[in-house]
Length: 382
Image (tube, rainbow, N blue to C red; front, side):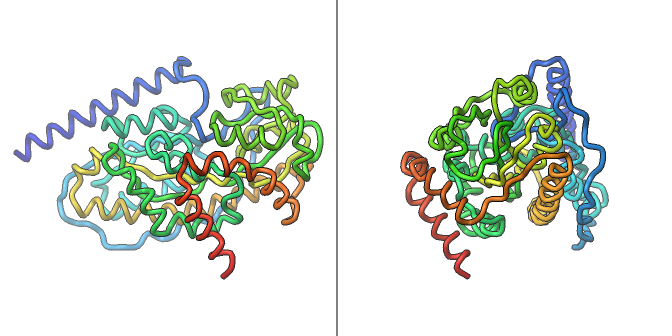
């Protein structure tokens, strides 16, 4: 029986590699156009030159914990992500890999596929469900098709600080959201950080909602986020991320919105003179594993993977915030005029987008929205 199980694992691994190879080949041939929903690539635009230097980020913590010495079998985890090798996301997966390999004496191996090599967020989540990919790390926006309640994180100005987001995401409520994946073919292990989205444009500084009116903005293909900008008086339009640099350069759109790191590494500062630290949406990442693969693992390996995911989450948040701050300063160095909104100015934006809550809270679940808002208010009062 043990030999049959071993043979099945080998065949499953071979099938997974074939699927991975097919997706990589298709991507190289252009079959997978566009951009992962809810997540932007961290790659240079076609017309720009890549940013040369990189920030000095906090090194990963020392690996601690008992080594699993028993022979529980050998497994390979193919881990697909959307961002590049320089991203905090990739560096945190390296830490995850090191924990597993060191604490199992190499019996758990992790192979990392960055840059959407094995598909976009939706494709990688589908691969988890079918059992042809072991792990991925998407943002919450594209996962709303599986767990609709995650759309709460697309609401504007929900989290006034990253620490407030941590409070909610690491709470009992956050665990309830993760547990909603049970039975979908995906097991959600932990929330990490994609981060705050910021606004850039080529026309003028943006300090108030009035400054947004009339701007032609490229936004994500997400109904809530389209509604945010329409409510503010902009003209939102969706397009593939790879087209954004050229569209801004040619004046097809005036601006876009993304985290500072994506704005920098995509060289948008070459065609965008103004940036505003609006922090209009905070998006989490989710560390996920195939439910089919998870159920094959011995209990000790499951416990280790869960523990490693939580340690990865904590480390990724640290370096994500360091990278974000560094990116903003680099954009200033490159000549972008960055407006940091005061608390009063940000409240103006919050009041202006209240109709978005009125329209979408019933769709998401008013009780859930109120629960998150109450937790944030209690945290801010401490």
